[in-house]
Image 1: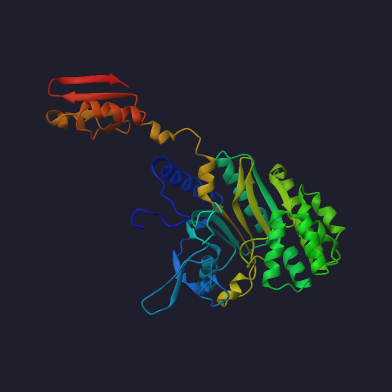
Image 2: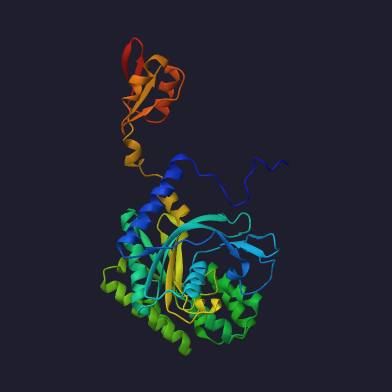
Length: 388
């Protein structure tokens, strides 16, 4: 098979309107964050692999890896939080910091999962400051940003990393068992969880109910009665505090909880988030608290929380909207022959476009295909106005 016309799995081309929407959505997101005081940051697309992994296992299936000329292993960034953590730790930036970014991330997914290996991502990171206030600011910032994008049916699901982490520690689960538990929670399998609890002789009542502990914030009160773990009780209390603050600010209708939420990356230590809409089964927002991340880079423990937005999914949600006003401004196509090029050039305005077509027939076809309202045809004999 010839590969010079094929794309790697999980990648695709974005053409014309979709590409333009991606740029416009990215700019709108960044502008919304700018207005709330966030400062933009940019990191390299690839770095040394150790930035993205706790181990030196060069067979890591989730990273795109390659070698530099000295044989050192490099990797394309799978997310933006880790590189930003490196910057903050190594440069010694003082907080509180409110950072925003936009760029591509790369993750190797199994085929037929429906996920893109190359994704465009925007987001925010808040480093330092009061932890609860930072979490409130992060959630409020993205809700207000989606209002700017006219996406109003957003649901922000709130969970806590300590629930899953505490259960795996209590049950002394190895890596394979931890993955099994995460899969059961992701699939919300009650029967599978009963078998799992029986296999590992788990006595924590909360474990059996976790697959169904999601929905309204009142779920937290139900969960408190099911656990004796001080760590999990503290996590549930913190979730309640965050939700109470957001409800007082008028964001109650955007909030939901999922006590069985497990994030992809292992650096989350506290409250975690995911975002959905009623029209999309796929999450387009995720993040959480990661206070211990900076210690990986030789820095001190610092409070930090962040949220990343999958722009590909956001643009897909908006793909049925009308063409943007900037496209609609170009209403007139100017066709001209060689004798009238000087006159045609004088008509160039933000509302007109000079035709590249060789004949008037071709220009008319182009105008119809690209939604022009009329064609001005210049020739040595005069000007003809043709409504399309």
